[in-house]
Image 1 (cartoon, rainbow, N blue to C red):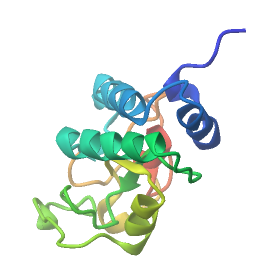
Image 2: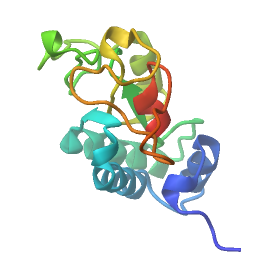
Image 3: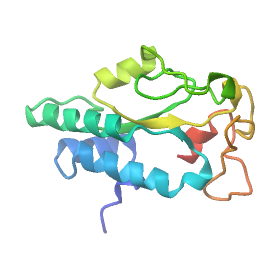
Image 4: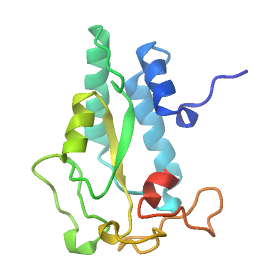
Length: 162
């Protein structure tokens, strides 16, 4: 049986692969960024900051090289666009907030960063997370990757599609 590709691994499996040096945080981040951009037509992501992401991945690899281990160290994760995130615009799926750059991270973003998670990007959502089909984002609807004629569901459709 062949090992699954990085984008097919769950969080725990990817964290183990990174900790066991079967891949690096940098390789995982690069792979998942490329995969997300390859499937941009799904509308799952609203923003990337590749330099920021790769810097975090390199920092995670440096922490791993010192022997540090935490459950999420080096694991790339994306944040729903309702969570303010330094280094990325946060719009809550609304053009009213276009280009907004927060001077701080939301608590969940800060806690994930402290645990060593790497921010991959910002995920699309219904405007202000108010909806049920993720088809009323001000930027673009999100398409279900298994059947693009269907919605991925909920206000977290970007998360589901990613």
